[in-house]
Image (cartoon, rainbow over all chains, first blue to last red; front, side, top):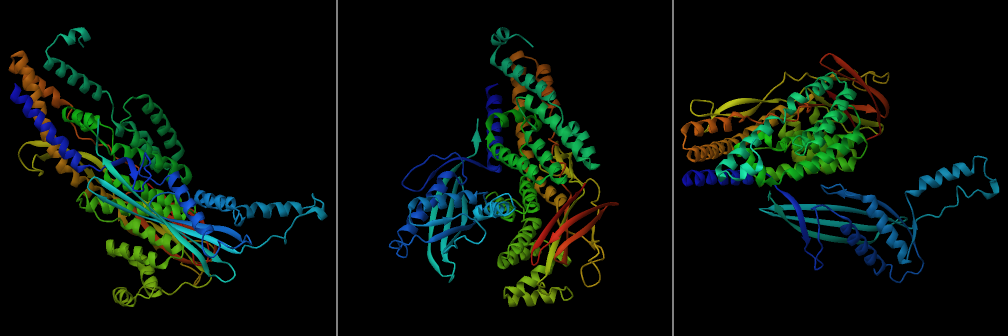
Amino acid sequence: MKTRILSASFAAAVALSLTACGGPRAYTRGTYEDPNTIEMLSDQFNENDLQLIAKKMVNSLTSSQRFAQDASRPIVVVGRMRNKTSEHIDMSSLADKIQTQLQQSGRFRLLDKAAREDIAEEYEYQGSGYVDPNAAKGPGAQVSADFIMTGEIASIVQEVGRDKLVYYKMTVKLNDIKTGIVEWTDEKEIRKKFEKKSIGY
Amino acid sequence: MPSLPSLRRQPPCWRALALALGTLLLSGCAGNYVSRTAGVRQAYEREDYAKAIQQLDDLQAKEKESPKQQDRLLLLMDRGMVLHAAGRWAESIQVLAEADRVASELDITSLSEEAKTLVANERERAYRGEDFEKLMISVLQALNYAQLGQDEDALVEVRRVNERLEKMVRDEKKPYQQLAIARYLGGMLYEDQGEWDSAYIDYARALELEPGLGPLAEPVLRLAKRTGRTDEYEKLVEHFPDLPHAPLGPDEGQVVVVVETGLSPEKQSQDRNANGSSGEGELIAVPVYVDRGLPPRAQVSVVDADAGAGRGNAEAQTATTVTSISSVAKVNLEDRVGRMLLKQVAGVAVKAGLAGAAGAATKSKEVAALTFLVLNAFNAPDLRSWLSLPAEFQLARFRLPSGKHTLQVDVGGRTRRVAVEVKPRRVATVVVRRP
């Protein structure tokens, strides 16, 4: 009887092994490769990544040679941030975070691209006859932006054995709207490593 | 069923046997997803999507009451597909995103589930989805996002398909190849965004995967020329000497109609020899994919008043098959059969061991034989699959002047008209599902 039980156990172990080898894997936990270790519960881009990028970009811009000594508080509009990864990343949230931190730096004045439609609607209302014409605010009095900020995030995913490496690179640039010249650009790299969990109980 | 105190006094092998029999009885009561969704499929095939969704809601409510939720993924996939077919793109996105998450969770191999299936059957485990089905989630998501005008999110899904397939081939050594439909969609989306190089790369790859693209190969030639790929362009012209590919005019745009036709194949049981053939020897039942009819060929035409001579393609255009889900499904499942057979053989050995233990405990050969028979009585292949998928993705491509147009899609004797707005130099996508 012991022989049969051992035989059955061995067969079961072989079957499980084959199944485990043949099946794909899932990732449930990982760590940054940066000095600051942070617990992550998935292998996806997360809010901390968002914060790291925004912080890097704003610090870089405000301390750059071009703008560090500029006391004129130039006007910036944050444009499109493009997603070239294979994850759904809320790029508007990233743009908002950068915009907020730029505003908080006190070095720039910001135009909100998303608010333009709302402002245009308000102009229509103010010109509709319900508002005192002398009190109407526009159109025709808005300031123009000096610079436009755009960006793009890309990723490279490498999977070897039980390891998965995810590399993100966010590139942001600031263009002079009048001349088109790129007055500033920088990039933030994030590299994260995960181990596959293939078997659960 | 003996009481628990009574069970505790029995030898360990008897407890194991009782547990195994109890598990088998419970699995026998689980029901068959395919039969339970027959009504859903009937409504779906009649294009009564509202009724199909209602029935799926009822099934989902019952599924949530079950502690196992073995068919959770299937219910989500079917619901997502029905919503997609009904043109409820945003809702389909939400449901399929959840299906994608569930599929990822189920990718973790559960030791307890694997052990259970050695003794019981594959239907005992939660349905995990075939490889191609998980990829189809992303393909449908790409189409959903495209219909909502969210090209960037659509491209994310296209990239996901391509990356996952590359991983399956590279790491898991699976005999798959890239999906032409995913590559072609990528080309369309990149072209719509004005990214000519990326568009060319994806279109060219789609052509490699599906050399029979015919008129759909037009953008490959046009973009090869536009992006300065002289050598590639010359080769393409030699291969497609009669294919018009002039640059787009300033007031000209494009429409690509994606017609999802037919019904994906269904799984049926087939006896295979333990070594994988269909010949003599010990036979083991495994699932195989069988076609459900021949998918009808779509005819697409522009039927608005502006589609006169020289102003559009007034004549009907026969859609071209870009990807056959039927073919992909069969390759996918055949790759898995070998591992299934090995597991089945191992399962037989486990059952023989358990039966032998029962026989030894009772000192009865008859008990051993009976136990073995009972343990194998419920051994049946898992015939569940995502039955609401189309059999084929067929595409038709048009150049049209900018403005509003009406397209007519004729499939299998049924006609549908779709309004589309064409913008200069943009690529509009129109998705039509005809089960």
